[in-house]
Image (cartoon, rainbow, N blue to C red):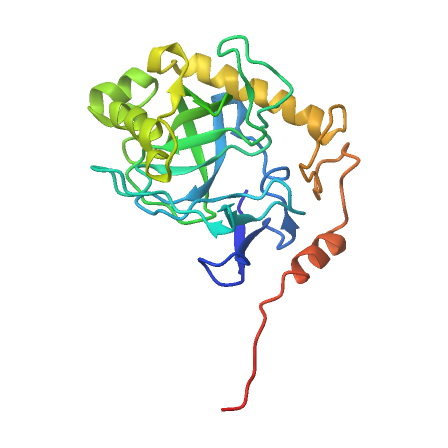
Length: 276
């Protein structure tokens, strides 16, 4: 299964979008149409890279837009960039999300006591490769960190790209601690302080900042997949979430390939002409 991207607009503008296509060249929603599992029997998941390692522009799946392209987050009318908080440069992993998952804001997590953040579940890929924006990778889940962001549960799932030459050495969170010493501590530090330059307080964590292991993380991902199933089948209130998709057979939000193409055509690369 392969996926490609199509960029519309200019990067670092509010109009910039990254749309996704399947192997047949048809437009899809990365949120809803890319399967969560790359290999269910082996617990291998798909992950969508929103922000490549060492970069600062906060791109994300546009959950409220038709077909959910990637776009840059906007706060108070301005494009959002993550500050370089010493000693970190931008994002310190390939950062993204697992498709067909949803952290339900109406569900209070029994472990954290907080509701979900209304987004797909986030991943931090610790592999050696610096991925590309919009790249869809196959990942092994190693563990998870429970960030509490402005009173919401915001799981950060630690994964490794299965294409990484060292992937076979990483099977649980303790392998990260052993083979990449300091990386987990840097991850906690990054998430704790990355909003401080914007005038916000340090973030908090559940479990006293401790990472939970692989099995806990996989069960957490699976639970968010169940929340997504309820979302896409209209069994729960979607609110402002846009559920238009092209492949989920039992979804009342499913649209035709032609309708999906019309969505993309509405995002026009605009040219201006003037007389010198």
